[in-house]
Image 1 (cartoon, rainbow, N blue to C red):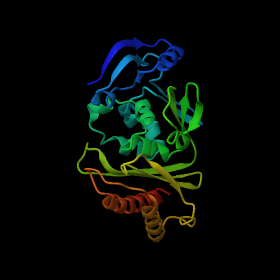
Image 2: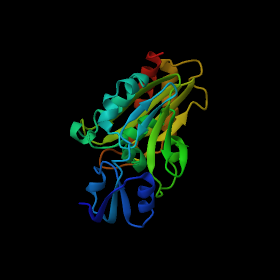
Image 3: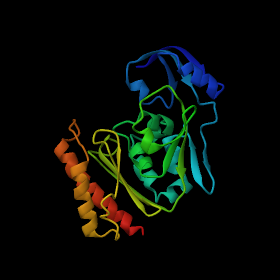
Image 4: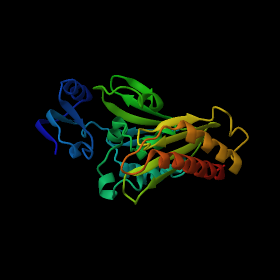
Length: 263
């Protein structure tokens, strides 16, 4: 159970940022992962009153506030239409509806968790994070950045010609995934992401032009075998490294064939 000495509901982002620079202070998101540990903090900082709970859309992008819940994303008609329901498919089995009503995209993306469906699907899109001091950074770069005391304000998804699909393997619904996978075609370029390896999601492109003549059963199978040899997996209580490597092959091929069916 989390314990803390002081609670502050920040009135401005600058106040939240300043407080967050103090050692052993912590920004609160939905608190659903944070509460599972046993940390003790001096001050916890609530940013729920800073206007970061909306999804804004224009002709160029979606701008998703850090305090938007996973349930808000799951139900957003426009975002799911743009992603061929890949967002909904990625979120629908995360614990349960009550959990998704509280968990936030900011906490999910900032955590860069190894089991994250959220990170896997957004990494397959043309996505960026907007940091209070760090500015706008591509999600592909953010995934590999060191943790610091900045504040994630928004997740941005650029609108481009996009087709996207998502799939995962779970021992049972609402359990943590054994492996996650998303595939997209954005402005003519393929992106494949694989997560829950059980490490955080990693991104691959069609560097060998295996799919350059389109997706067929043969090219999808060949690409899947290529990724099986590239994706680093390991073992935990949900599956062995060998099993996950085999799942890489299966999910990548399955997603590519699904993606081809959208074209």
